[in-house]
Length: 464
Ligand SMILES: NC(=O)c1ccc[n+]([C@@H]2O[C@H](COP(=O)([O-])OP(=O)(O)OC[C@H]3O[C@@H](n4cnc5c(N)ncnc54)[C@H](O)[C@@H]3O)[C@@H](O)[C@H]2O)c1
Ligand SMILES: O=c1ccn([C@@H]2O[C@H](COP(=O)(O)OP(=O)(O)O[C@H]3O[C@H](CO)[C@@H](O)[C@H](O)[C@H]3O)[C@@H](O)[C@H]2O)c(=O)[nH]1
Image 1 (cartoon, rainbow, N blue to C red):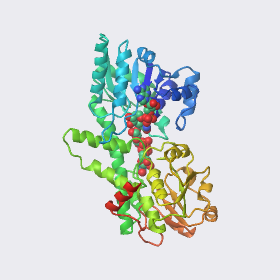
Image 2: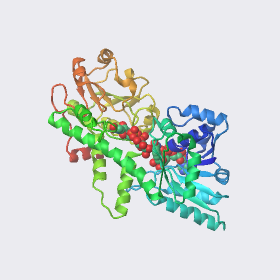
Image 3: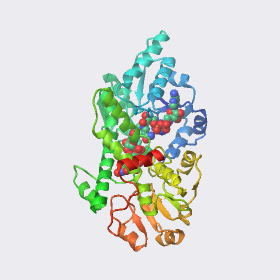
Image 4: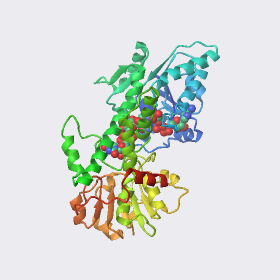
């Protein structure tokens, strides 16, 4: 099939590369000319395992191309995907302007019956708005061309995007007519061979299913983080609690890892957008704002724990930070917990030595205007002469450090671990003052927090 995809970001690019890999003729349209040029040279603008190989084979087999020319890309397509960003507006709602701009572009250039598909995460009712925008533009051109608008939300995770796309656990399609389902069956035939992954529903249910999935996952994370905060105070170990509850198949082990808060381009934005949609439709949600507020509090907990030991005047102290990206296997820094941590450290006067296997450049852009932070090439360089080490992201290379070397390189012994990578007793034997999430320290004490109440945490949040 001839497929055109608007937006060559995480979703558009992975969708394009994977659909080309299974033989579709894919044209990706982006307004960013530099990105298009790089992609046509085979250079991916993002780090995503496996993507480079698919990009290279798609280009060499001439099944994949990148362009800024929307006109030809639309005129020739059987299926047109919209995979542009839907960032957060100031009031928390999703900004659908980029999506609706693409709809107008499609209306401007459509020449034959086509299926328009939203892959972007969009509020319920957006497919109707896309339909109107395309129909209006066609009417302006005095043309009557039949087209459908379907919703096909994307569930891939960054860092595992190619694998998730190639082996989906479900393909949700929201359709307005039965004939559209056949087109989706053809499009996704290669991913749907042994088990029927296609779930057909109405368009609004598909749009809501995407938000419901992300809100559910974010709720699990905030729930376990709330339990971790309680565990710390009552002298329990959240890791034992996590295993204990995960053994119940009704709860399960997935997505209940405590940590320094969820980040990324999706959970924070989508929880807020769903809350906003609910309010627009006259419903005051209770769980969603709580999920969000537990998370923003959690993002400040690392600094608070560190300052509980070293004080909140960190002038003259060097703090190493391991892991900057919002999760391992990506260079994406959007809403990463490392950002509020580093801002607090710099405001407190610390010198920061930061290391991440992939995200240093993206992080350096964020902190371009700040003084006191240096990005180093190895995790060893980060800890050299450091008074404390803080771990924000659980990259595999952090799981088994050479503790003797760490002791030699570091000036201090404090390790604040936002991902619970190490055993508390082992760290005590190795001579470290180890503070993690939801676990008492080896001395059996609750980790001291520099600031703790909601009010104090929000003062800290405002300060950074
Ligand atoms: N990132 C993820 O893991 C993920 C997963 C599932 C769903 N989503 C959703 O998918 C959508 C896209 O997310 P993303 O992370 O890929 O975004 P992104 O910011 O990485 O990429 C968006 C791309 O769209 C391009 N663009 C903007 N306006 C355009 C236009 N008019 N024509 C052509 N291109 C245009 C931009 O230049 C950019 O390259 C969002 O709605 C997001 O919520 C993201
Ligand atoms: O038990 C867990 C699991 C995750 N996280 C954090 O949650 C965030 C998001 O992680 P993850 O969901 O793995 O990455 P994303 O790429 O943001 O993927 C989510 O958001 C995408 C965009 O909508 C969806 O497509 C995916 O299905 C959904 O998992 C990261 O900061 C993780 O560190 C935790 O703190 N504890």
